[in-house]
Image (tube, rainbow, N blue to C red; front, side):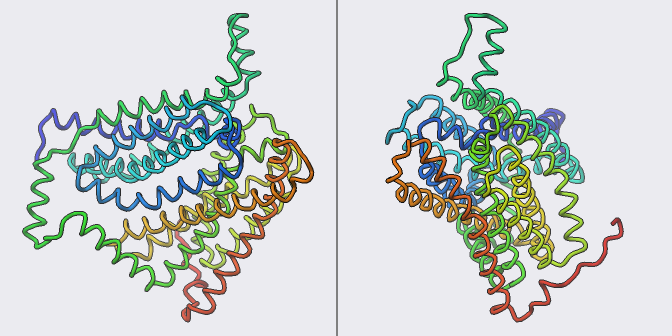
Length: 468
């Protein structure tokens, strides 16, 4: 259906807004100091683990239903909802009083729930709106180019955010810069702790303004699509149909052993690697790395992630799925074994492996699943993968929280100050990471041996690509 010049300008604007939305939605200045910031507010390591569990479970519960909701109320409304929730989650942390208390934990719990709901609401809705805009313009072929541009802009923004966020958390650097401007200017320690949150609150306002300015695709087009669906005999409501699709995809996964294995392997690798990555800032502090370096380390990890994409593509092109699983498992175990030594300064080298595994797991899981699944079930099966990964993180967070609590209770007789006891428990808990992963690894191999009679699918070497 032809569109007028005004609608065309609005649709073109949606493409720019999509890039801006992605850029500022991911611009979280507190990422390089995430664990440290939560602890400095007054939380304990156990509470931090519980909050991670709540965040993961919120996404697990909301991710797939949010897709159905986007089809019912419209994608722009889901994007606006995600933006409002982002503003709320930042406001909660800006306003909450610091210091250990039941109020502090309750507010952080509300923050994590809002964050999880926001992630679920935004997941896919922004892409769907951008793709629909391209389709309305007759430019579906430009989708890959738009994604590439968006990825590049977001990567630059993430690189910058990591550095600025770490600098903003260093009181010596911030107050030193202020004294350079005026000898009377100085921020309090409490304000310094809140500064990355305040900066993220500002970006959340930009996200909200961007989401509100999105142009809704012509409702007449949507109405026509609904009429055509009805004429084709699709009498189920959108919600009922979406849950029917979920059940169908779930049955498909269990019947297709290879995809089920890929999801299990990704769950094991991702849950352990991501649990460490979430705690990375506390690890850096425990090995005596200055806070001002955290941003550069995070930015460096982001750059390594770009290289990992090339390596992951070569691995899926030349190695069998099971060999890739062994390679990633070996890299993760070596990395975690080095991390548990907590070597001052140089221990940061071992952290690289966990970050690398995290990126390559996402790439390889998507590669294998997309290559095996029917297009009619693709999005729903991929959402099951997302659910599995977040559920794995939730279980890992729960176990980590229990371990830290047990370590603290077991060393109360040492009469250590709370801060030293927390540091001790953190370093000791790192020793459990490689052990926990080896248990998961053994379980997955056992499942493959016992329950999968067609094991050749795991050892099949893909054909050599023509561009390799």
